[in-house]
Amino acid sequence: MADTEVVTAQLQIAGYEDIDFERIDAKVLVGRASMPKTTAIPSDFAAPDL
Image (tube, one colour):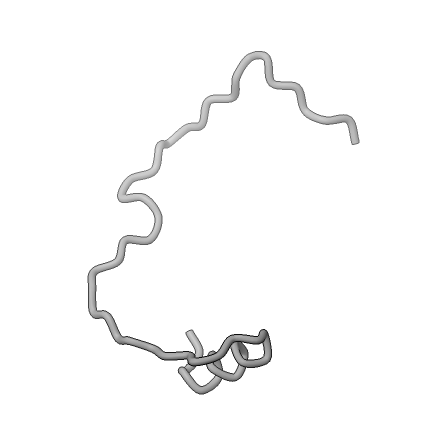
C-alpha cells in the first residue's frame, strides 16, 4: 500500500476533503483458510459461444 501522502493526494484529486487516516492494528485474513481440491461444474452449464 502507498504511504498516506500519496493516498491523500489521490483522494484530493478525486474530490474528497478532510482526509484523515487512523492506524488500526488487527489480524486480517485474506482469502480462505482452506481451498477445495476440485470445483464442481453443474451439468446444465453451457459455455458461451465465442
